[in-house]
Image (cartoon, one colour):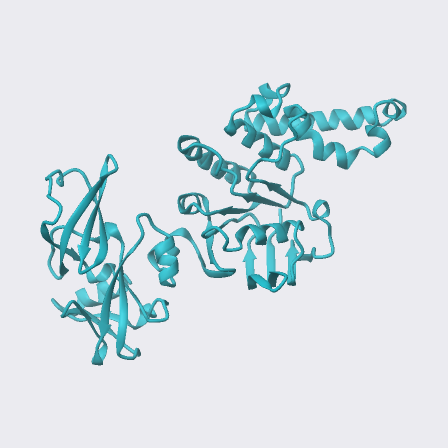
Length: 395
């Protein structure tokens, strides 16, 4: 196992920049996910770490040692690809054993006739068999040893690809969207298996996905990427509850965060639809701002000190245990996530309604799209200084 460090890593294809200068530190044994929309550069960054793609600038270190001059097989990293990259003509056993066979046996010892004259080959092969069986037992795939990849399900092929990576005992695991080809039910199952595998092995894992659910459920930390930049790094809770920008807030969270246009007035007052919110923002210039509210923080019935605004009901998405309600607020779509219990009443499209949210649940973003520094946001006292301090502390 080993930590990993990137310093000033850049990548361009011709005159087209793909990665801006990136600095990233991943701790020994950490599970970090690179998450972002397609084309944001996350797979390219993974390939640079693996040595499959040379960077245009910067350096990569594993375990404190620079690896820029090393070829992929010399970096002690193992990569699991999106399409598994298994050899279709080889059995499961041979696919898993291949990295060990290539590393431990010479070219002559691998040739059909000449290998018979190697006195040490038998001992090496016995060691390879032991190592392959040990990994296969952990992944529960030993019963498939004689099958070929075409005879396996998607989940079984994914385990074989993991086994081929694990058998090398790498310092770093690299995974490039390994669950994207699986159906929804199997993805849920394999997410749990990968998380348990990481907990059991304690190895450093870097995982690439565009699926925010995978990123949120498996990672120790996640790095949100867009257009070659890392927008924010933090734990899933930190990124969800304190998004650094509108881009992060919109990408992380399902459904996406609601954004309402508001105005910052003199004295730090925030005005929404002609009403002044019980918020004060210090150190910011007057002008437009955006208020972000998660759909689960939008309420159908206002509580004390809530902020209310008028909407028109549009439609309802039934998700089983909960529903996503779609509203129109002066031409802006607003989503509300509610549990079915207590909200079974059918409302006709076009019905005028009122939604509400707590000031403690909103995120304020400036015209540059960045979150306004939370330490400069305070709730004005509505019912005593203690309540104001408590709500301000929740930000």
